[in-house]
Amino acid sequence: MGKGIVSPGFAGRRRAEGPNLPPGQYLTEDFPVLSAGPTPRIPLDTWAFEVITESGQRHRWSWDELVALPADDVTVDIHCVTKWSKLQTQWRGVAIDTFLEDVETAADFVLAHSYGGYTTNVPLDDLLDGQAWVAYQYEGEPVTPEHGGPARLLVPHLYFWKSAKWVRGLQMLLEDEPGFWEQAGYHDYGDPWREQRYQGD
Amino acid sequence: MARAAVSGRLTWRVARLAEAREETATARTLVLDVPDWPGHLAGQHVDVRLTAEDGYTAQRSYSLASAADRVELTVQRVLDGEVSPYLTDTFKVGDPIEVRGPVGGWFVWRPADTAPVLLVAGGSGVVPLMAMVRARGAAASRIPFRLLYSTRTPDDAIYSEELARRVRDDHGLDVVHLYTRSAPPQDKRGIGRLSVADLAAWGWPPEFEPACFVCGPTGFVEAVADLLVDAGHDPQRIKTERFGG
Image 1 (cartoon, each protein chain N blue to C red):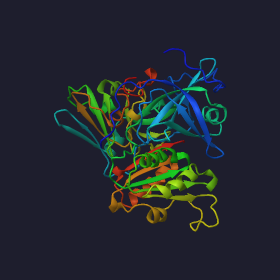
Image 2: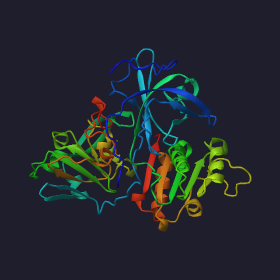
Image 3: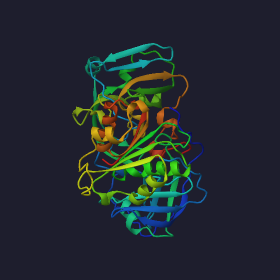
Image 4: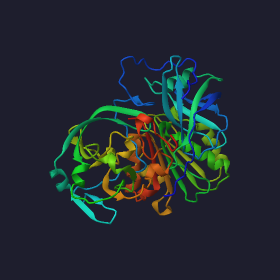
């Protein structure tokens, strides 16, 4: 990337001691909401999370089963493709490794499905080894519906649209399949540190 | 759910401010001269990049306000903002800025779409919806459009004159202004947040299966989308775009 075009009179915020953010991001203290449609309301007594293998095998957890699983408390930075970053957010959730312990799969890719129809694709390797969770608490409280409750996927090392709100399942795939935003021009992988916002980045 | 495929790489283009219009006390429209602009769909946005003398850069996304043939952004000044006060107060005709886009293939309206359209705007959320109204006008479309536009006061409403003119000239377009803080004396509705009664009075019934586009601050969009779902609109036909915390 060459030197940018200077916009006369633009100074920007002083940022000498600012935190290290991915390129093109700015820090926010708020927790903005980004969704493509209305917020679905999912009663806990009908909520379920499923892992569906490439051969069609289904592994299912009810809400009570989810919260009985061993959980992690994690503090992570999150980065939204719309440019905001929020540091040191605290979540409680179940590592994806835990759901996959008894799942036999040769898949390399995952399509996450949400209540309301949203989907997003992530390589399976990016969900393993303590890199991703089904999170049900934010800052010590249940995740609110606007922020993806009762439970959302949390994949903090990728742009936040990969952290699917209202998650209801992971579909194991042998071949990559683009999700909702990925079909609409956004990047297939979405690494904020390589600024992979849109197709071709 | 068909969406626009965006192919190829989105490159940064150097644009220059060709013209600026003050829309309200806090909103300014920037008419940008962008070489080789590929055109866009109503509802899409662009990324804008500003670079300071010392090489520091800041990026933001702004909705396109114009129909496809030109690039216009309407920027609302955000108190304590890093970028918007520059764009509303300092950025001069002839100054350069970097732009890439168009981006987004979901919150869009195409002139070939046949469903009646309900647009619901809160504050500066009207910008991408205005692009749809303008695209409809440019295509001489007769698709029935209704815009419900909520602002605090009449003075906060962007595009008021053009909307009034289009209601007169663009057949099949209705616009209703709703105010939350102060309304003109002749406004029988009075003031208040957008309600289920407003949607019943000025929206489309769910049986018409309208395409609904809701844009505004998060609290506004959450409330309106919930009202539409409760009124019986299919959630799949309600598209939302939110900004702010």
